Length: 285
Image 1: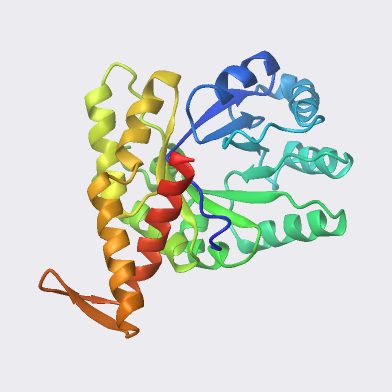
Image 2: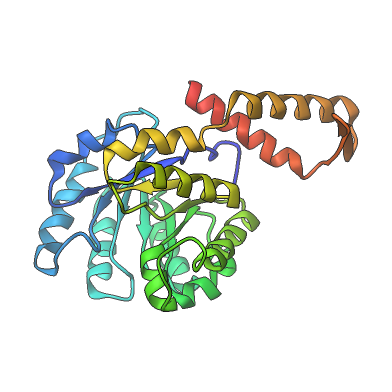
């Protein structure tokens, strides 16, 4: 991931494609990412109408307000997904990013990348890992396209595929595989939303667990969850100060490792330090 593409991805929220009037409210919710929904949240009979309304949202220039705008299309292994891609290719003002659900192999992503390139669309990609096949191929998927900015962990579908409880411990292995794949390619990685709106404390714990594992952010199902998610995934003053100190020490030492506060720190740590500062600068800006 380039310095330019590093941005806060602490929280995201879906906005239904059928209801374009909700889109401005979602953009003002405080979420770092707003994803217009064409997949699971739209009934088959409403897919065509939702697609037209959703793409119309991107027909005019988008405000430079720091909010990342995404369109979640249907699976490329389904007719609805193919129709979504054809519609995106047919317009001159594509969404800034597409989210691909239920990805099983790198081939799906490569195909879409090639089609977008052929059309000269600079649309970015976000990939959901939520199937057994996708989990097995996560590393290769993460590396298959330079358009990819983030992997998303789809815990609900993954739990169903694994025949396990949708809880932290049973899904720890799967989460770890997705984090590993994303980190290997320098991508952000976003955790599944916390589904119990009446348990804000539980959501904060789940977000803290996800952050500790390496996640960049977590989804929300309601705007009232966003502020707490942003708090969890925002670098603290102490983390920012430490990052600045480590970077300054390395740059002065011009070596592969330094000792700071009695601890040996090697150069690969620098990438994470620069990332913390880049995110802090974007948030403060």
